[in-house]
Amino acid sequence: MHLILDPPNGVGPLRLGMAFDEAVAAVLPWGEPRVIGGTPSRPKRRALGSFDGVGYTAFFDRDAYLDAVELWWPGEGKASGTRVLLDEHEVFTEPAEEILRLVRARGWTATAAETESPVVPGVSLGFTRQTSQEVPRDAAGLPLSFTSVLVAGVHYYGFLTTT
Image 1 (cartoon, one colour):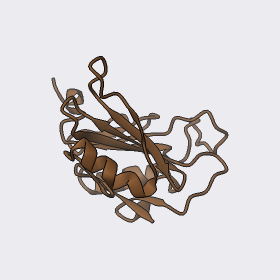
Image 2 (cartoon, one colour):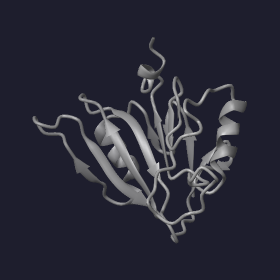
Image 3 (tube, helix red, strand yellow):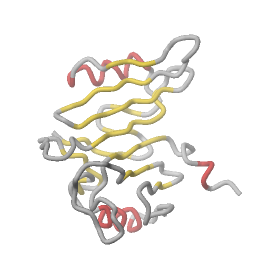
Image 4 (cartoon, helix red, strand yellow):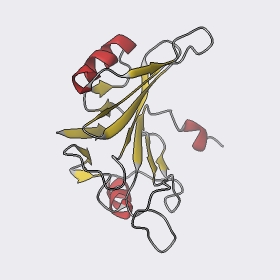
């Protein structure tokens, strides 16, 4: 299976702006998600789960509409038949620098590209290379590949471009 990153629209069957019940129905083939929130004290909800070892969190706004989706790699020593793709490039196995070159080739700008957590405001994509696991690392000590990716609406990282 392929989970196609489609910023700023969504990931696979999860489309930004979906109502909570619609989004949960979209991931039910992956298994029942664990839901956090949706109470008066925590009005924002999250649905967490995994598909073939790839973890996900679906984030919902106060009105219970899908606001962002984050995916995680399966982890050290774990394999998955599911590929998380951006333009046919596998985000969790190809070098992070290659994925960032692809981002720049699309005309997008990644902020703090040399850090653990570059983001692409206006699209919105967020990448992470944070892990405490023993993985191959570059000369700066960063994992060679990304360990998570977030797809959100165009204004999600708007605070980074505000002057």
